[in-house]
Length: 472
Image 1: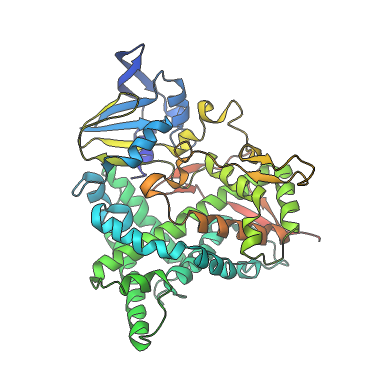
Image 2 (image 1 turned 30 degrees about the horizontal axis):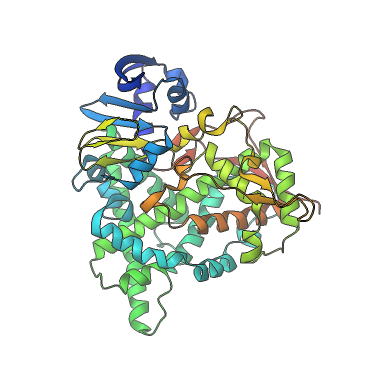
């Protein structure tokens, strides 16, 4: 699961750690080397794995520590093998057990028939008809509750997380409010605590008491949603089951614990990832005014409340979001456990039970994949001029990347079902905000925010900003 970055970090902040790196291949000969990784390489509180991986003569690193074996990859062919072959979450594996109190048997913590069932039911939420309806209901600037006459400093990521949460609850569960005794800000802290402490379990750190309390509150919240939805379905038996929760309840699964796990998993998927992506996106725009101007030019060609076709046509904005997530992926590291012995395309031997991880954060910063200008926030690397530049007015067309070189949304059988919906929502939110406001960081100029990783990435301390209303 995506928490090994923090596991390594927790130790590296205390001391320099020597890693023994096994099985790297040069001239066909297996060799062994030992390197020392200084804690100073981790100044941003996320493992700068690209600095390590780019300096090694291998594309695969195998580490043995704490009686566990981990393999890290930077080669797309290996990532493709991981996501398409025998590397899955085993029933009873340590990773699954560690996250069970939080995620239970939800889609992110299960495999086999249960995973297939959850994915199949969920897939109906992401067809073209659903996406069109989704765009019509996506939050616009009126929902941002920003008062142009009160341009005080606020935390952008907390604000968008709140908006995203409300929208997600409405779209996935048709649920519009929280428990009276669990206000929105408290719910956010409860959810964050559960995710953070669950990640810390890999190092036996964090309060188990607080985790138990947080998980209990979350499950109560989920059970109340389920109870209300069941009542709604019983009162209106002919009700069209268009939301995700209705689909699961109508599928014949009456196990409340199982449905509760599903609700929590989809809250995790919808609440954290998109808000994390947008937080870093608006920070990058604040540092790159020319790119913001290009996006504004694209937005001005669209309706104030753009429809599905207009949002899809926001090509430059789409490319800028891809570029932002290349540098700051919502899930910085992910992995699986080998079900059986295997050999990767580069010859690395994987033994049954080995933890294998791929590193989107590091892969997005490797020169071998993105060129010498990888540090630049450059949407144009995802674009080409359409036509001959004359007959088609030189408009941009989007050029996608191999998903195994850019595994931000995973790839293969487990590719993110909500990818298209996430892009539609982010583009609509970007258009809604930038049309009316300029997002200005409140922090000191030149200070780069700190990137931290739990189950999903965060910006440490939030993103304090001022929303300045545009003159026109």
